[in-house]
Image (cartoon, rainbow, N blue to C red):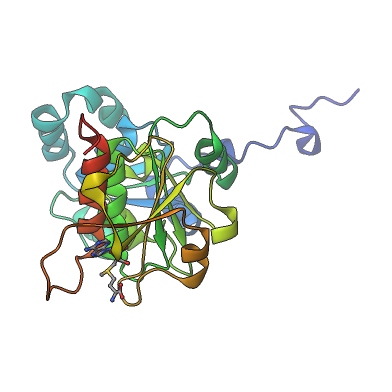
Length: 268
Ligand SMILES: C[S@@+](CC[C@H](N)C(=O)[O-])C[C@H]1O[C@@H](n2cnc3c(N)ncnc32)[C@H](O)[C@@H]1O
């Protein structure tokens, strides 16, 4: 019989183990950067660790300052960050990130699998809504919405269309909170089950409605509002109070008001 330890063809594939094989953080970074999620800055790393992201490599140009910040702002992740953070020269740190962050911290984490996200989105009974952004265009808006969804404990954030909700700019806008909810891109036909409440200025006033925990809350694109497909799937069109002559609210602001309404004790 072959000895699996000496015959590489018999070894169980362990992609994460393979990814961790570098002891030098810089060569690990270069090998992993294209396939991992960039956590840009201390707060993104802190949130990712809190919500159990698998962090593969973490660097800083000032370990002492980063750990002092941890002591001050996030003592709950002190041990984890102490174990993860490797100090590199400032020029090296700057060469690894597109835009240096004031905290001089950056890390790479494993992107959760689509299967895991689909399971989380399909899980019933659902105890908190799923937010759908229908063809969003602005990366900053998408990040802000993911941060809101994390804060309100939403089940997930689904985007339709071409925007990648895991784009580095979205992750930066979301402050690493992608790991606190399920973030995935789907078609309208693939949306999770549950009553679809689509937000539109011509809908029924939200103040007269109770949004159920299994609601799918859908928001239109910044430029053109809800798509034809999403409107066809909607069970209810819902409006946010807005004075005449104001055309619409910003997308992320609309999500904030709607999630707040869902969370209000009397249901709004
Ligand atoms: C910037 S708005 C889109 C404006 C776009 N020009 C349009 O034709 O609808 C982005 C999304 O925010 C939500 N929204 C903005 N203001 C709203 C309001 N007063 N009531 C309900 N939804 C609103 C809608 O889902 C809308 O599609």
